[in-house]
Length: 133
Image 1: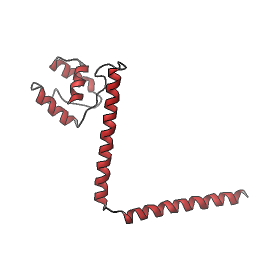
Image 2: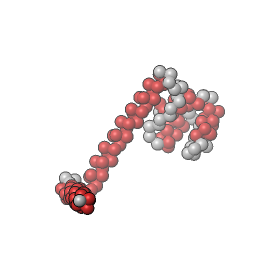
Image 3: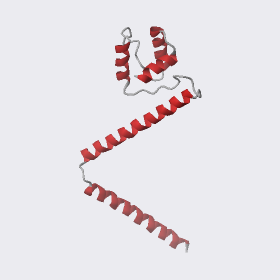
Image 4: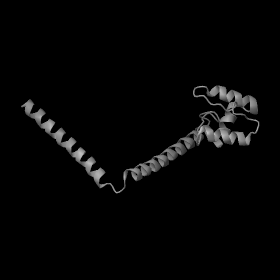
């Protein structure tokens, strides 16, 4: 009796996997776009989702700061790459050099220290400047 139940479960599992496999094959064969178009569409969708998540997190962190749950400027969320931010900082603060803006992962405090010294601002003020770029 137990063997019959195991055999039946095995058949159900095999049928389910076969159905999933058939669905994947049918989806690939019947897809309206070629692979490149599908990847581009997926990339655009994921980029939009990423932007939406980033905006939601920023709004949430701003709300925490407004409600004094966290200190002002305690969260740093940048838009774009560090190179974009670095270029904008150099444009806004002409006395900053590439050495001042060298970023090494895990050594953020050193970067903030250099910027504090060069700009005469607090760490929170610098984080706000970067976040607002």
